[in-house]
Length: 315
Ligand SMILES: Nc1ncnc2c1ncn2[C@@H]1O[C@H](COP(=O)(O)OP(=O)(O)OP(=O)(O)O)[C@@H](O)[C@H]1O
Image (cartoon, rainbow, N blue to C red; front, top):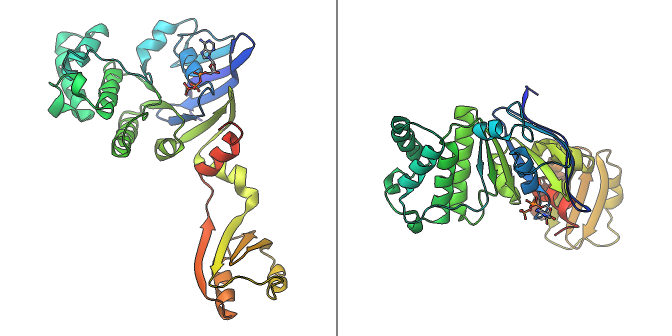
């Protein structure tokens, strides 16, 4: 990994006897989109607050953009834009006025404010509605305005806490596409916390699975799948037009196949766990033996399976 822009070492936060974050070590490199994935109460927000210097760790360190977040929170805040899960705007002001207000708070000159706010409204797709009061905005539009506010100080890192919460599916898609584009165009590092696995899967280069304060795994989705389910090999299920009799005359022959590890039969469905992908050979075998096939399904392990494996005891 290139020099990490976020470096968490043994980060721990205890609330009384409860370890909200437990010995978290994690490196995130510049330009990466990292998804912190976990159910409610996993410790995602607490981790973010420690990274911003808004709450002190019980143990461990958080270095962000080269600064220790606990001893130098002001320097970190200059470099990091944070969008919390609930956004607040001045509803009696227009979107543009809200953004200009934040720009002034960040110390931009009036000339910079004029140029930058108009650029950002364009980037987040709010130019046509920027003179409307934010009280009229949908949740999706508010998220976009929140993103513009976060970007106004040209941060190196943005941290988005549950950014897709409450947005309709179309809005989610647009928002995630925007995040991805910004990250690639500006080498912006993005830390995105969510419990929406599908949203995370669409946009993140890597994900961390966070459960009960512990980071259980971190990798890209493909590697996580291979690590967790690689031993399962290729699983293919074949649905015949008719129920498979028990005992089944062809089973013994198939069990001789080197590539087949296990055969499970349930009425007309036969599931094969195989060492490699032998789906075409299996289909030929069934056809040659006079079976009519209604369906063939190859199981691909994805984030759903990962989620279920880690979170099944919790949800
Ligand atoms: N100030 C606090 N005092 C005591 N306990 C807290 C405090 N803040 C968080 N916790 C507890 O720490 C644990 C982690 O909470 P946290 O908000 O970080 O989780 P999360 O993953 O962000 O969940 P959510 O998605 O629900 O916000 C929870 O059990 C929560 O109740």
